Image 1 (spheres, one colour):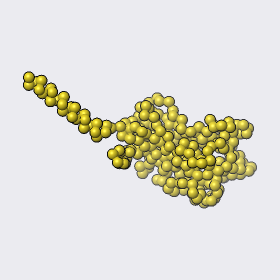
Image 2 (cartoon, helix red, strand yellow):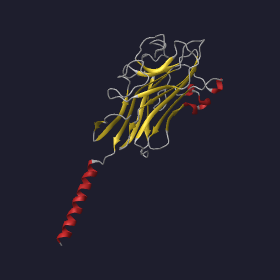
Image 3 (cartoon, one colour):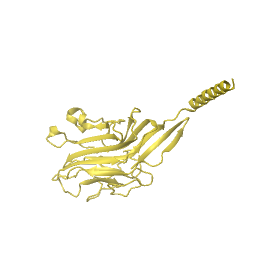
Length: 272
């Protein structure tokens, strides 16, 4: 499914185009998969494999607007003031009321191993330049495991998949970080391309102009392996943007003058 109508935003002499957005605001709490609603892109959530625990705190990947701790199989963990929480803790730069979230259990006796995937509807990128994809991501402020800990690898991966055969564009792959791909080695201050623990951070990636495919699709995969920590991941404010690939007004004017000159020359030749 493709994005709806492209929105043009005029800025000076340039028209910036919003190609597609997903903020989850139009979706009901608990939604795991949905087609496009209210001008927002559709999305799907998939759990790869089966979590190893069945504790009630195990959070399935879904949309939530929870702002307080809740028990049961809901998209809520911790408390509203806990740095590990994806429940609108103060100062985390959340946009709107809702976001997509997945988390492990918080139980010392039940270890959850999760690998969840968020797939956003494909967006038409043909006919645009200076294209970007951006999204906000939250990362629970806890410690994460690597294979060196004799645990399943915790990771964050994000990529763009293109429609006409161009190779996938890797946006994030924490398994390539120093220290055997340890998420704990992520930056501790805001970064434009990597998430930061304990807050929503806007990540922005350029889509190369030499990619001529018709559409691009964002896929985000996260994995956690925890029994006591709140290994939580949340995504919000997805946006594809670009610049219409049209000649500048001055270029069009020059082309018109040249065209008129050629036409006049042909007329003179015809009359000779």
